[in-house]
Length: 260
Image (cartoon, rainbow, N blue to C red; front, side, top):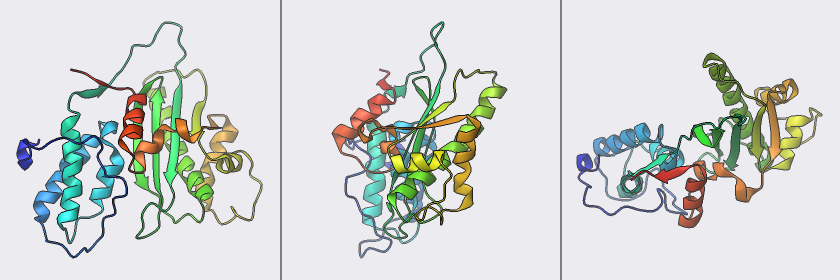
């Protein structure tokens, strides 16, 4: 793919996005070729759907800028491309289930509150594991502006709970039996309490009804929402730029290994 964009002689990078990167919609910089830029973004979007370690957040970030493109946008897109080029020998391990081992579905959900500085919407990230293997992941902006970090976490958990229902249906069609309810790991205790207790609160009464879908799943017993410390939250890599050490650690924890 690098030869297509005449970048096969470029050095790779250790992370897809520079920490603290802030792209503007109309910076006063030199204009670049929009067709070339969109071709890079399209290729990366195809890759990140099957490779979570490319970090879907980084591809989503550069996808927000398709008009009035400038040098800073192109540099950000090329950095993601250089990162993808440097991990071509990496892949996800799919270990064989051991005899007698329980098959569990676990998900990590997290949010970058007001991550988009233009419209103040938060960025949600989640990743599902079947055993120790990631099978589903997402990074997207929330549809509403959250008034607090607690609300943003609750909306993110609801997004993950919708995916839980779909995965349950898929597992049923594939005749895969799960031995226990899905475990949803969230690093905000207030959001967890709201998911378990439907009591009306002053700071939660304005949350749209559709986001209380998670309560229904908890009450049905198909979903268990539990606390997870921020240090063990694997969904971090799907919602914000990270430093090299932290990003590499999370990438290893989602079972990404060298296949060379």
